[in-house]
Image (cartoon, rainbow, N blue to C red; front, side, top):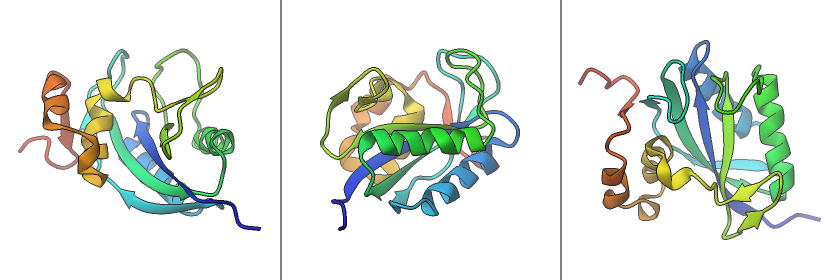
Length: 160
């Protein structure tokens, strides 16, 4: 029996090792994960850490169809993070790969382990800029302007 497919948005970020390669490998891991179908991916962006220290991040957003329920999708994302060497030493620590479930259909989830939509996504240019790449209707120019103090640039266009 086939499960209903739910559209979900996943944020990716990394700032340790080779962050660009880590994000690209994370996208490929999502592409090859059972129960997921990647529908769209954003450009890659370089951004300064928000509420954290360490080197700049590389970020992206991927839209998927998921046959997994939200808790199982979260478990898959955490498995992929661990496989990429992520260690959760403290809140907002630099990381080899971060995968955040930003949205899960029209669902709203508030549990001890998962909140959807992601509670801080509207406060982060590194989420909204790539999200706008894949669905311009979800992010207004006013939202991006409000976050204009957060440095973010397309990867490869930093000096442009």
